[in-house]
Structure formats: structure tokens, C-alpha cells
Length: 280
Image 1: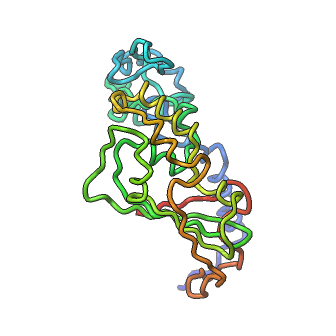
Image 2: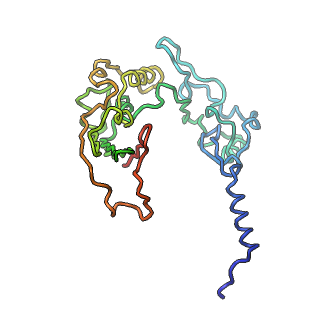
Image 3: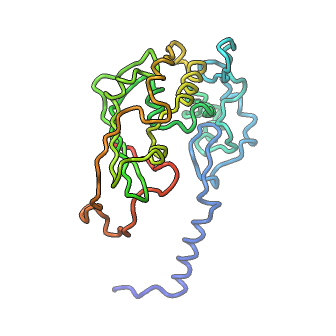
């Protein structure tokens, strides 16, 4: 004692074992078709091997799955067949064990957990557009967008509402958004239209109307809402839904606020939508 240094052969063995454990085939993940949870593909089985068990997760009920509607006159129908995650072709070990026991897995989508494929009407909504389309308002939100002149990044802090607001008319009036959302912009100069387009707080009339119309047709909690196009017109198109509070910032980040390994570069991205980090 103390032990001697490892031999060259031992070091090579350690490096080899570590390299082998990082092979893409071992760490690549995929979603389970039964429960939708991510697992390493190396421990999963092909869905085609479980065709004889599909009756265990075939729940033909509109309370579990629903076909997408395009018109209000469309009849409400369920999706026939097994309840599976869209685009997934593997089965995780936990679901495999349950199926072989003749039981539906606990976290199977067929147990009322199915969401379906995200429609195009709900994709790429900004934070502000999601708030306008939300029927229940749980939080107050303060968003700070910081520009260093070259790069931008955004942070949002959420504060829980003492009493949740439930809307029966969407989007809410423009005056009510000031109660739940604040937008602070910091930087060396006033924000330009180009910078606004990169923030997560722009509201597009077309996007909000499309999202609400889809939800009213396809979401059970939105079937009785009233879509107010007059309220929507109260928001300026392709602009923030609230007044922007600008705070000039010419001082670089203080040294005490920097990491020991900070390389001096600005946080954020130089082009495209700025990243948003949510706290709370």
C-alpha cells in the first residue's frame, strides 16, 4: 500500500470498455409503442413480436381515443384497434413483462393516457399564443428577454395564482393579459421589429384562431367555449400581447455572476428564435 499505478494494458482495457459502452447502438433511445416512455433501443423488442397481445390494449371507446374532426358536423368516433404511440415500433421491458402475463401494462396509453399525434394547429405556438389559448390560467408569468447586441436569450418565471382563472370565452380580453403576463426587454438599445420576431411572445391572429378552432372541435374541455374574434382583434397582429417594459443595459455581466469556466461569450443564440428557460 498504496497500490501501484495501473499497467498500460489495464488502462487500454478501461478505455476500450468505456468506448464500447458509448456506442450509439447502446445509448440510442426510442419510444415504447405501448406506453410512450423512452428506453434504450438495446433493451427493447420489436412491436411486430407482440401482435398476439394487441387485444389487451384495444380499447374501442371515445373516452380513450378520438378521431380528429375537421367540421362540427363530423360524428365523434374512436380510433379502432390497439392504442399505440404514433410512430413507435418497439416495446419496453416493463410492458413486455405485463403483456406476457396477460395484463395491460400499468402505464399503457390504453389506460386513459393516450394523447395522439400533435396536430399542426398546435405546433410551434409561442408562449404568448399558448397563454391566449389556455382555458385555465394557473400562473402569473414574467418574461425577460436579454439582448447583448449579438445574441439573445429569454427567461420566464412563473408564480402560482391563488385562484385559478377558468375562461369560458377565449382568447381573454386584452386588458386581462396585463394581470398574468409581463414582458421585460433588456439590452443596449430599444428592441427592433427583427428582435421582436425572435422572442417567444409574439401573437399571430391566424395561429391563435386556428388553435382554438381545432381545440373546440377535438378537445372535450373546449367543446363549450366561445371563440371571441373581437377579443382577438384587440391584440395587435404579430406583436407582443402586453406592453414591453424596456430597461437599458450597457453593463456586462458582473464577474461574481459568471462561472469559473466562463469563456467570455454572450449567452443565447445569434439567429433564429431565442431560447426560453422557464423557472418556477
